[in-house]
Image (cartoon, rainbow, N blue to C red; front, side, top):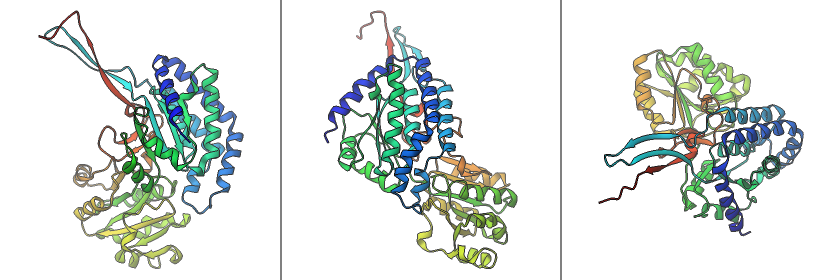
Length: 415
């Protein structure tokens, strides 16, 4: 299928967004939120078709699954976005030159944003809300795993747009084919930015094949370091929450690092995870301490492949480190620069951890599960950027804008 006519329509529609006022945009977002709740049953029926094609043991199954509770959460996030200030037309700086020219730096939309994502139908609503609020049109390229869920969601949103006399092409879902993906990655002149959301393989593919700018939403290989001076009550709750709250998301714990001086506390620290049947891949020292103190069916010896793995399931690795510096070295070697945490009561170590760990989000005495746009007060997120150009961490409204300079004169000409 030739997608050029679709891209042309989206580009044309994107220009109309510059004329929408904030009140209209907020009205649309709230109406879509209401419709998402009202039509939950319809969406869930379509979602069930997608789920029926996927193995329930697949780590992506949980991400694919929608429920009435999750639809309420989606609607809540959209209402949050509607309540936030507009990120566009903000004056970022102003100055007046000696010749009388007044120069303003003003935030503006990118224009058209392409999103390539896998089995995450919630992304459809998140992306739409953030793009509309920031004045961007969006081209969605979801995976075949979620085609029925995505189609139903886009249809719902476009009906609300049409009702409010907004060009419905500001939200477009491409067919779930590889040919369409290739065309989106090369839609120069039509699409201003590509944001991939999914596995590391997907992200690598997009980065290597796109001819337009890409902001990477990297895989989450997240560590929690239980320091020599860690509080074991805090650590026990934090570790369990980071691993078991929702295992299929990128902010879930993948590797627990424990200072060898506190190795005797390890059975207590991981005890709660046994209730969720979390399989632990423990290094030699950790294994010897856990043997007999953690269910044998859930305890395995770690291999080299156990570290640097994003599990997305009820599995985690444990690494014993001989010092604070060794913990930093391990994180530097295996981190995906997503989210890293330390559990410690030692202010010097905490401050050093904050300075030395290279990640988009660095936590002290709390769970990495908080790496989320809504939890950061951003309303929602379009992804978690692990790169350093333009955006880093949860990407929300401000990250979906660029800027331009406005120069006002009274007839000046340059000598």
